[in-house]
Image (cartoon, rainbow, N blue to C red):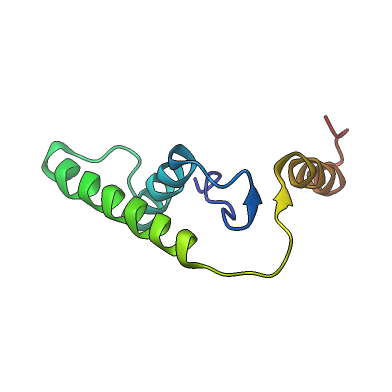
Length: 92
């Protein structure tokens, strides 16, 4: 359920608004225990996602690091390699 919640800080290029929103959606789904909220809850779910998206952007913009930015492709390749070792499959 939380596959879109990833580290978003210190990447080049920086996290996009879509990536931040996807993480907020996954977080709200996990916390609420609902992937499809009822109509009665849709408004509060949407509001929570909007606020979390805003707060996450604020957090990312405010964080400071002296480490060089990570490369998205290199990090993705490392993740595929870890998955291949973990699950015994060939890295794609």
